Length: 320
Image (cartoon, rainbow, N blue to C red; front, side):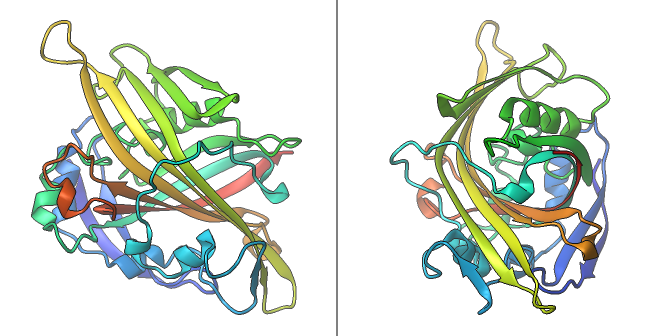
């Protein structure tokens, strides 16, 4: 079961403001339903969750208008800004800046969560097992949302600036599910259609999924230059991806697959390595979760997130 040990406050300077950190002890084989019970017993403010994102200041410059960029949206530290995207023109593949290219050893740590809805009670949210994040594999890239710390390798191709998505997703899913066994059989991804990914799981290795289909509805990105106190400059890259996930798994009815749909968005902040951080790249991930249109509560919260999960990231370059 998942037991809340402590709720700590850590204060950091510059980009990161006070963060509430939820420390949990987990039984890897235990069902996620126990984690939902644990979430009911702790409070984390929306401001504290969003404090780990980029904070805009007068010395920050962007290639885009400050009034409309993704960085400015995140800097408001307001979960209502993280609205679901309406599908429009299929987005192109995400390209990453020069400082992110290469192979990295990534460590991602669960940092907390918030249920920001003002129209749906916390009790109604935590009792809804269909909300992404409440069951393993319901958010593919962080397959066990509440896992305290997860380590995996990430590859950004040096020449193109494109992510090796097949490798990175396989690494992340396997690592989040414990890393002691191979969970992912295959990841199908074709750069000619960067908005669809299929994840096939080793049969019977996980109870919650046999196959996952990911559909990307929108992407945003922005590269920012920050003037630091010692007159040097540091680049910060922010990007987002809005996902529709369909999870297929075993069913209690013979010959009929269980199918579950979910909607969420990842908001990444990546900071250029600097000497003070031992040349490690730091960042954070916010995952905003939205209700499915078929959910009975959808019209109470059709666009704003009903849950936001936060993770801190530290990455060390190995090659590239």
